[in-house]
Image 1 (cartoon, protein in one colour):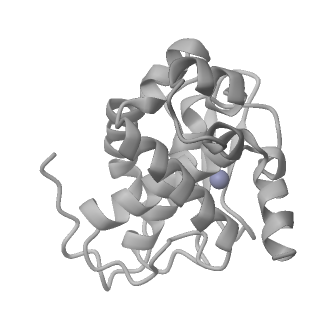
Image 2 (cartoon, protein in one colour):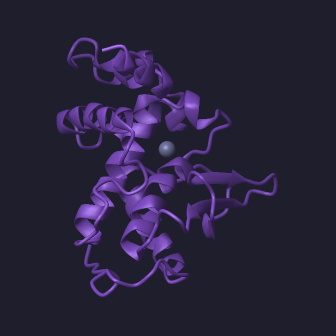
Amino acid sequence: MEMNFFGFEEIPVSEEIKDFVPLIIEEAERLYGKRIEGYEMPTVDFRDAPNPFIEKWPDGRLVIVARTIVSKTNYEGCSECAHEIIHTLSPFDWPESTSTVLEEGLATEFQRYIRDEWCTGAQNPFGGHPDYPEYLKAMATVKELLEYDEDAIKKLRVEEEVIGKINACHIKKVFPDLRKGLAEELAKPLSQLKREMRHI
Ligand SMILES: [Zn+2]
């Protein structure tokens, strides 16, 4: 896709990002499958929140809450939105602390992809999650799956549309020849991975 954010680098994060969010959503759907039905196209709201997150309203509205404090430039803002956009493909009621390695790793990988492919010059190497090694480990685990089959997420979503509900059985059914242990690594909660990494 032809897309260039050159010119954003030194500009503080701005409302302008909102115009790019539908394009980032389109790219996420192209790579990983369509958004589930029942929700409107996500919008962005900038707040001084401690973390980026998704607001899910009963009427089907989805709001990506991005941070004005951390997202100092539009590059960083887009990168942060890209992570949250993955969570809007198939919103799920569990808090992020119980979200799987597959979902968080995919969100972080897409964040990396948007930063590297669309936002050349971004300062912060991982946008929203620079200090969290478990997100980077989850990203590496998802990359192993995507290197095995670049359409893996679309294929898994035929089995279970909601990314956060994809379990090890789904993964083994769709990819019976995957490296031993990878399905379990992908399906475990990120919080469990975090605990394991702290004990190393
Ligand atoms: Zn996340």
